[in-house]
Image 1 (tube, rainbow, N blue to C red):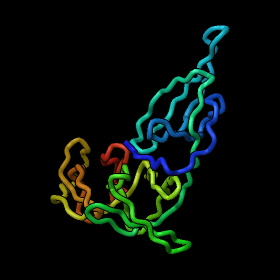
Image 2: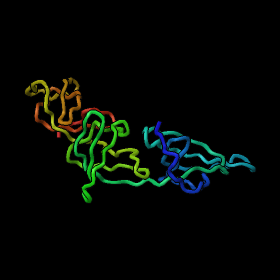
Image 3: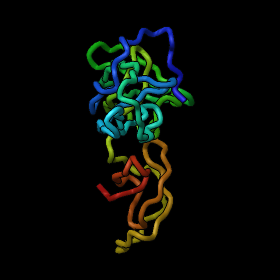
Image 4: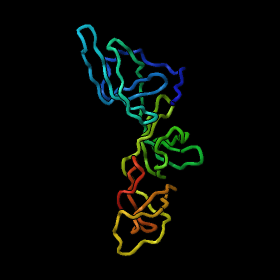
Length: 196
């Protein structure tokens, strides 16, 4: 669970009826982004707001229902495009390409850190100075640094072998992929998709 610093000042509570897709709010220590909004009139005397939200830290999708008279803590999230420099055992190091200011973030706070690629820019979400998440493209290309020999003429994609990519990630690739080949990876599943 994402620990929210309660010393941070939240904006004035807002009614759930003002939520819209793209809105962000805090509840029970978690931060959510609204994906869909629906205002339902169940009876003449009551109404319910239903929202589909994404937990920004865990990336989990959840449906929430509120009585229409309830309020939530709105928060302001900023996004920064930062260049990834390198990572060590516990942290990732980024640099703002405009100010050259460096930011060090715990890998535990970055879902998808295994796809970080040196020299590439990534969009990171922040609440104040607290990093929340990183936007990793759905598909990325990496060079194969180690794998068994390719099988000449074998274009089958249903037989796989182990491979290690330039960022240290271990994946399965088809037999025809060789060391130094560039492959495209689906970052949502970690699976090989095609030879680049």
